[in-house]
Image 1 (cartoon, rainbow, N blue to C red):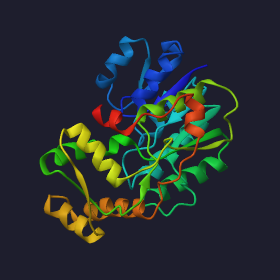
Image 2 (cartoon, rainbow, N blue to C red):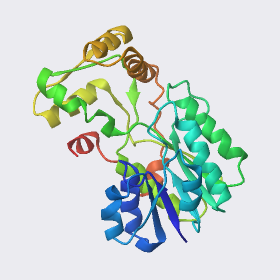
Image 3 (cartoon, rainbow, N blue to C red):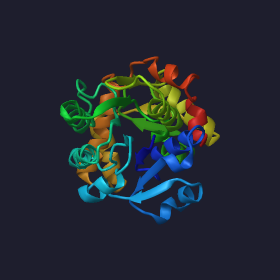
Image 4 (cartoon, one colour):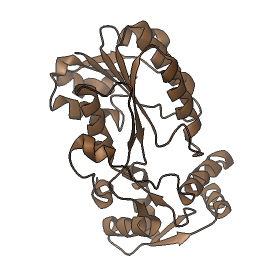
Length: 281
């Protein structure tokens, strides 16, 4: 069995490759990457490296030749995700791939979350494809907050418009280990898995975790969406990006990432990584 991982040098994809190498022979793994030089360490470990961008259907078809399973790690390019995912799905079909696993977003087909539409469209396309599929609906990554550590250390504050909303997040390696299990064990075809951490934390708890990592007391300072947007613009972000980031806070305030599901723990066979541990890196 040959398994291809797209985005194999990215933050999530590289962890999936590491997880797969614990049980699979390196020559059975295909790292699909944009930058071959960046993948040199994988090649040194015996992993096949094939170059293909999500925007290049022909290169994707070549990359998937002889592959049995593909992990489609969702594109990082918000706004361009669906056409890029479509290229991957169609290339996998053309290459005769048997099973495609996709990293989606929690409750993607029913959520009003700002990131949901492109995931919803991708899931709908997968449902009409000829591929056997598994959808991994990942909740938030703890590491999404790593960038807050330095600011928290400087200011002692976590300013956000998340209200009293909670996040059922987990570490990237938790989601990566789950993907590796799905790719290497039987019985996952046709399944949609809601993957979350084993607890949900609010922003008071997040501030405390940031404080523990930063080495000082940090307090959560609730703000309005408009206040967060204005602060981000003042820090140099364009209006569109600032508005989008502030909307993600509002989505949390509305409870869109709060629901805890046991499936991730069941797949990986252990508790998910604590927030502080993930923030420490």
